[in-house]
Length: 205
Image (cartoon, rainbow, N blue to C red; front, side, top):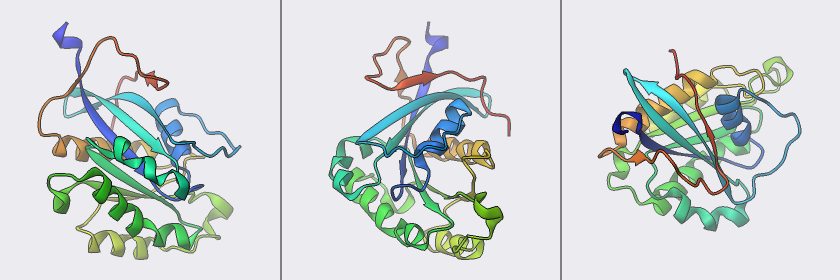
């Protein structure tokens, strides 16, 4: 039935290894957090149905490995993306400094038709650590960087506590929708090849 089809929005999450990309995705889709760190090998994805402006969409979220040796896998995963999420750890300066590299890497690999206006969203994660006393990247510094790159939306998050995760992904979905040139639908029956389909009633923001 056509009424059951969902428009597909592809989102890529990038950032250094260990910044919490997988944890953010799992917190958003499954509302779960695992304290044990396990590096992503290659790439994986989860999907979740979200509601944006009274319409349902399927958000396909790709979690890619942060290790340098896997960056060459990027081309196949980046192509066709509707939004790119850049994640850093507010307690690790290097992860913030590498945001420019990840942004450039994405634009090179994905080759979007309009790179100047391609939607990015930045997440400063792990705000919960040590009650915020361990952070080395200030919110002001992060927002200044985002402003210098075309006013990229910015959220401070805690995958562990779920802080701001729902709001961040609602913004991500809205930005992905703006970039989608035409309706791309997810079939009612699909072999996700290892991905996991998670259905939800949608977001309330």
